[in-house]
Image 1 (tube, rainbow, N blue to C red):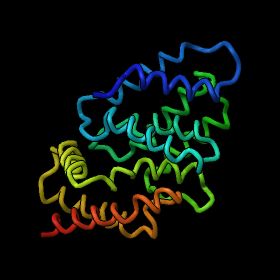
Image 2 (tube, helix red, strand yellow):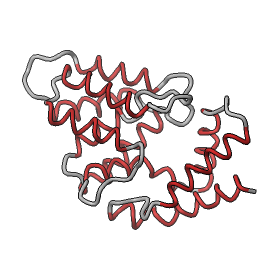
Image 3 (cartoon, rainbow, N blue to C red):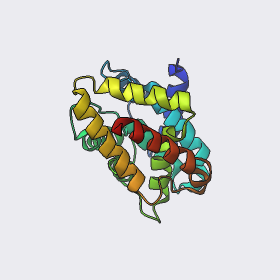
Image 4 (cartoon, one colour):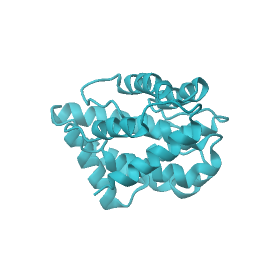
Length: 214
């Protein structure tokens, strides 16, 4: 069970670290709105558990980011809009950040960076000099390097989110996603991710792809 109060505290810490000025709406209003989104019934993997895990991974990787709090805010928004039958979730999530963050007192440059990072999660392929992007993408993909039982639970949750897709179509679509990830020169771009997660993630992805193809 995810501690909602702890998540609110984490939101407040990140927001206040980048906020400018003094007269702004109550930051808890934004936390509560985001938390409601992350608890929507269509979610089985993209839940509060995933949000908390990504935030934890960002904390682990923060030394590699140029602006760790912008990355944390991007983590909050990166799947804030999530409808499994839609293809524009990342764009809509970025748009939500672009609307909400200025109202909450976040300066334009930070808002733009958060939205850019959210959009980057479409491909998970940050540039070599994109330190913020590398941290967010590594944090988001860290689930791929989980222990076998955790990885199996992750794949089951993803399948549940796409329960409306027939088995053959799901297998083909999921296999395409796995191949796209495996074709990346590196899944993880931070030194920590490359050392700790890369080999295990590729093993897990390869095993899942083999099962889907059998």
